[in-house]
Length: 273
Image 1 (tube, helix red, strand yellow):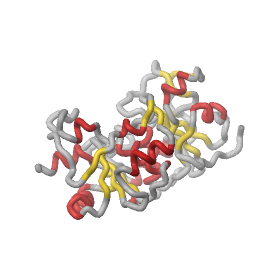
Image 2: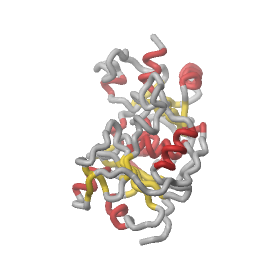
Image 3: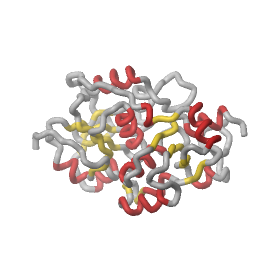
Image 4: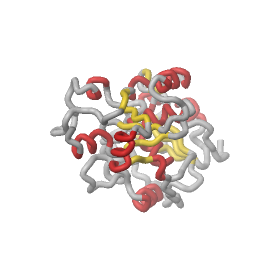
């Protein structure tokens, strides 16, 4: 298949990806967080490593995985050969985890033709599709143009107002134990707690064996926390798994959604009560 792809849904199956590997505008990104480039590791055929931590985050920021500048994102996306017309499929090694963050980053920078691989690399391997060892991208640079859409991201000052004034539904993707301060935060030195006026929906509740549940099941889980016309901010530990909820909300038809970039790591560090 050589014609250009335009996604009608933010999720694709491994069978779909396998059948469309030859599409002219397809770009496959390995968005596994905390992965180090290593030629002994396996990847999906033709995949390019999307380095969240070192290339697509503000590396010197005080909190992890901080949203990059428009200039940085455009530069690094072009270095991966991504074009304005690219149809981007993102996966990660866990199933659906950090791939949703990459999907949200592209949307936040104005690129809508992007989808997450349902079930990720585990589903690809389970289907016995071919893999290869990791390779550095050495093709031509792309002509990708970043166009920041501020409605996709929420930052600290706006989050304080949203929490205090209850202008948004704040939905926290952390585990119930962390949300209720029954288990410690994994980040050393970070206090336990919850953003005031937030509710909990663990991101794992939208998944079944690393793949998204049905649109109906996702909708049921979200509808218990927010109405379709509510303004919603998703939060988590550091802005990664909040994007899994954003992905689910997008599929379920929610429109007015944002991700709190600093999430609990920032809030718990800057707010003492």
